Length: 309
Image 1 (cartoon, helix red, strand yellow):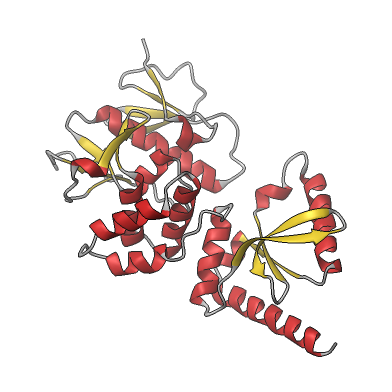
Image 2 (image 1 turned 90 degrees about the horizontal axis):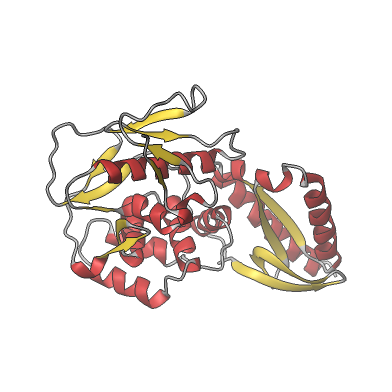
């Protein structure tokens, strides 16, 4: 009899991948849908192509986490980015590696996708989430900020704040991490964290703007228009520059045309109120200098417009 283990519901966000125990028959599943993961455990990929490569990477990463957890027989805790996924945080740039701390670390038969960390965890820094042993959310965010590239770390930090991590808890976790490798970088990254960011793209975009020397972006700016009260994702209210992050998925699918139409009406309403709208896509974030140039030019354009009145 095959054994099916559902992964934690929060990291999946409805994808609900399933892992198979070692020795389970593969015949009930379509060819090519079962992927070996760890010590005989395998992943049954959801049917149909994913609309997002990011969601596909997340599904495979969380499936690998579940397989590693099922295959380990010694005490362990999921760590850093892996813990962030179990907590349900957003993540970008996933590389498929599983990060954990294992009290009895036996390197014999080590798996290439499993990275073990030699760190000390106190009783107050670990907990259980959906049956998975992890570092606390505050410790997880700080570890990610110490170890990951800044854009990946700020995405995790923003989503953790949206999920209920308080600023006070984050500050305490930073205090407890004093002296650890990368703590100065972590403080710089986490100084930008803001739970009002509604998507990973917005989080990354704020980091690009900050590194480009731009004034601090405001979030969720209210604007009264003839369509009612609208909120600008990011921008500068004094200059009336709106910076909108658009993901491709927003305009794809059966209602893509309706979404495009509604967004056009919204932009027209903002422009009627004197706002200049700058749109940034995922592809743009990989060319940060070009994004910064566009944003500076938008600010200057609005300054010239006001001066000419």
